[in-house]
Picture (cartoon, one colour):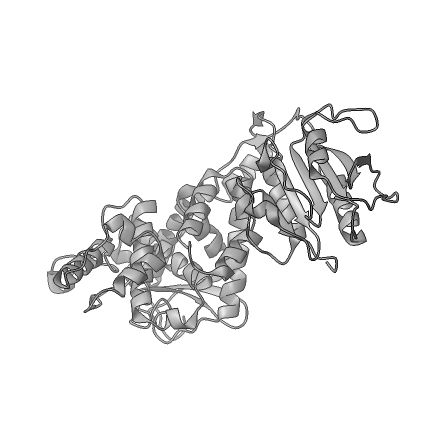
Length: 456
């Protein structure tokens, strides 16, 4: 700011344009961008860079740099496009951290294509923003046009006698763009007078560094908050976070684990059947949440809605009672060793879950009532079918049938017994103890299944 001053009036006009764009993001067009810029503690107008950049340095902070003269050459929608582009670059740097990818110019171009395609789609633009041409020339586009890159790609592949994919297939994810660009024999990156993130050095501008640890921390924080907003009912947050997750499909095991840890399966309302995570407790909480539906009564919370509007976010409807209690049946296999830590944690989980009516069983060859905290008896052969018959109302335990239909059945077992097919397999959650057989995840249809470790 000190070394690269700009005219105060220009700075003020550019600041107002930037604030108006960020307000639009908060109202609904890009919840991710809104949260991301709330994490940028410094918004600096400077002519030290030609366009704009988001930087993250080793002190754990993030800053937005923007050239005020450049912003005034854009219309309001153009400013929004540039800011969206910068936010997406920072988030994609968080998603794709592989150094081999980041150093490949084809992946750099692929990221430009994918980001600008999403920006055009989400901001409802027919084309890239433009700035006035030099010396009164025609307007010049800001950034790389994904359709022009696709046209170049089609011409190259047809010259090789190969069949190109359609535009929609081409831009499906960053990695599909990257894979198709690698099929090209000759790739010439377009030379543009203006790029949406300044300079030829990538998304950081000229001479600006980016600390991966800071990017990771900020990226995790933003995604976590947007997922939570989506779970609370914010439709814009839900749409954008699911779109971002879909566009990072096939990004590798690390990205899969990251989305799983953020609770994406809970947001989708599906159960992660075969995903492996280290924290089976978190996995179970997410899976159980997908089984227990909220009530259907919707209300508008006036105070909460007013706060959201003041922060620039959409108000939302909330679900309130009266709510039917959810029924969870927990069955412990006592035919083998049962880790005490697993029993204790499950007891705590179900006891702290609001609106849950818990039914506890122990079983080996027969089904027996079980009271948390009391000793578990057993040791004979194992028969899963008895638990299935009790859960589905066909078997009496202690002279009584289960009078309500369970929303979820948690089976804690080593898995070694004859396989069963419940009437509704999607309600069953299998926790397989150390050394057990995880056949339920290979069952057709598959059931939610995860190994638990006695040390955790």
